Image (cartoon, rainbow, N blue to C red; front, side):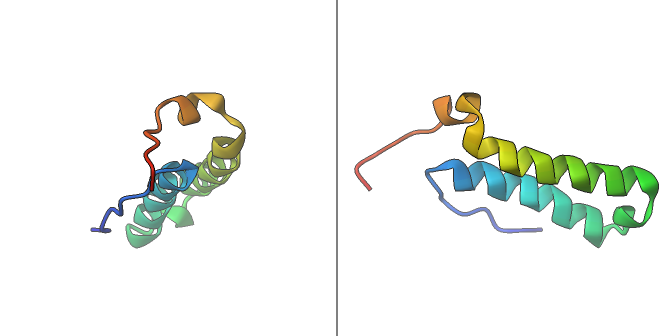
Length: 64
């Protein structure tokens, strides 16, 4: 299991998506066509986090 880190930006959402992709690899699901499709979806989701205002609305911003 991956350890979650305390990130306060869009990097946190990218980390969560990356974690899902790593789990696919660990379970060898990336070897199936369905798994490959999921990897591509995760890749696109990671790119969209920076452009998606919905993800930014859920962020807590503090002085750090």
